Length: 248
Image 1 (spheres, rainbow, N blue to C red):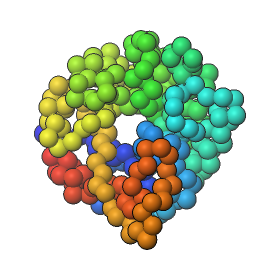
Image 2 (cartoon, one colour; image 1 turned 30 degrees about the vertical axis):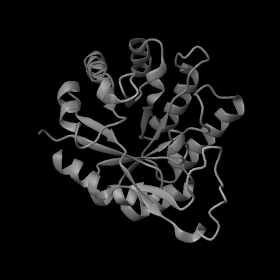
Image 3 (spheres, rainbow, N blue to C red; image 1 turned 120 degrees about the vertical axis):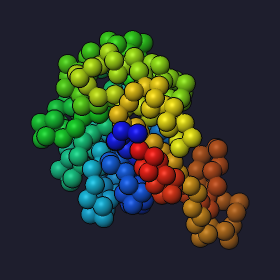
Image 4 (cartoon, helix red, strand yellow; image 1 turned 90 degrees about the vertical axis):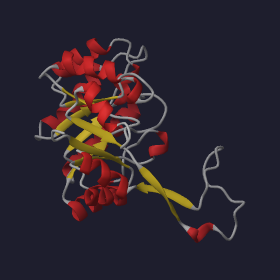
């Protein structure tokens, strides 16, 4: 198999450390992966950079639930982007849509320029998967100088969207990179690479890690109505990522 770039979706500094040890080429650092990934803390970036020295792209997403933000939320995006770039981020990952689901060109340009003006990458995330016309979106993002687009091929799982991803890669040509992600694992990796023709992939493989400090009172929940268990958290599965890296 030809060399393929392995990007790992991380939700913490520990995730980045595990991804680094597993052989990842770069990572996307978030917080709150349960909600699809939100902006990480500055501390998590600083620790991850110090401990690994690897390429770290940072998510810029102020809240869950859509991609059409209030003026205040967008100002938060700008300030977070500036702070993260100043403190070692190798690029920003973001997505801004209008109420009709089409890309917000003005806001996208502003965030992209924050990164591009200092020689860093600008990545448009899976907001592309809900736009009404992905060809129109690719044309716009390429014109704005966006480095890369993360996509599942407008399917819930990229394994169901491989033909669209291949069409996106063919349509984008050398104008912009297309990065398939969502639902990629060791068992479907080779099929997805074969069917898409992709030269890079985005994976997230976690395992539960237990924190026993809450076991004195199991009736207490600190989360929302879904009541996730309080005695565990997710951490990048180093062995699984190592297996994927070895396949690549």
